[in-house]
Length: 109
Length: 308
Image (tube, rainbow over all chains, first blue to last red; front, top):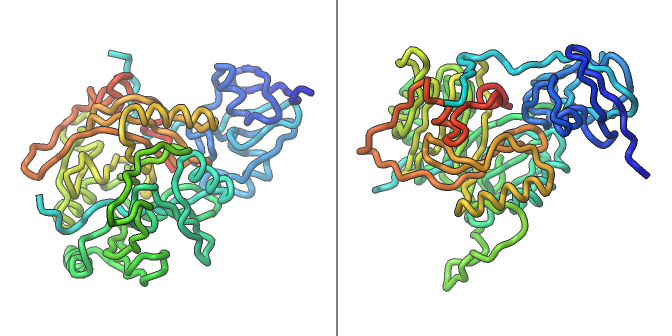
């Protein structure tokens, strides 16, 4: 029997993709080459993939309290790399690559 | 060259979100040897070739990152001497009792200007590398997991890296190997320092948050072993940041990847020997892409942003 698969909608960009119930919301996006949620460590350590789940059910692994407080988690603000969908989901991106001392963006030269 | 003072990086204590998952990763994927567990629930590992009891310690909690990084020094007299020198320099030190960390003697602990906790110690039980000290066999036959040679160094992120450089070079006898400058051509973005003849024993990058870990690094024997490590990582669906590729800085080949808690690790091979009579190498801001990732020749988003 095939693993249940659900739709994830990233409300900021309108990007919609299929994600298996055994894949994290972040991995589902990456595996299909889609964009929208920032990709960092993919394991809950860095916090860049923070999203607000606007609707839907999910299973969650333990959250890094540096980035997700208990209140955040209760309110559905979670790390996309730590949740797996149990239904269709709508998520809004909250995280980003941090601004830091020296942000480099230059073309291949 | 006479090796006195600080010998090498000795141990790193990492925070992990799920101990069972982490022990599985460090044993099966990394191929480290579990050597003990203590009453606090910490789990201890060493590489197969390391002779001292432990080089990686895991502590389960609700956030990832580096608790502390320890360097082994030559002997107890050296440890006492460094303690005095640190205090004379104005650094507050604390002595951790022998045995608080399993099989490890007293540790002189202090906090860097960048907020990181560093330890110096002289004693850690020699449990050997399994081959013995008399008429040994050579440990070259392959086995499961990545099986690095040793825990080699760390790259830490924080604000006052100038303060760090001064402390390590003036008090602890490290020398500067390479540096990257910011756009102004004067301020350091990053520095690589050594207490031995390695291309680096510690490195640091300027970052607005103190106390952050970029990676703990493990040495591999060859480029072939680095490629093999990448194969093992993908076999286990490990999160890979970048690589296998090469750094311009230090010339080492590398893979950056993440443990199950999001702590970045490195498996690398190569580099060069740096002696105290050698000039440090300087990289300009404009060339930092090639410096960090020699083949891509540009930084990825994660290098400056993704830390634990």
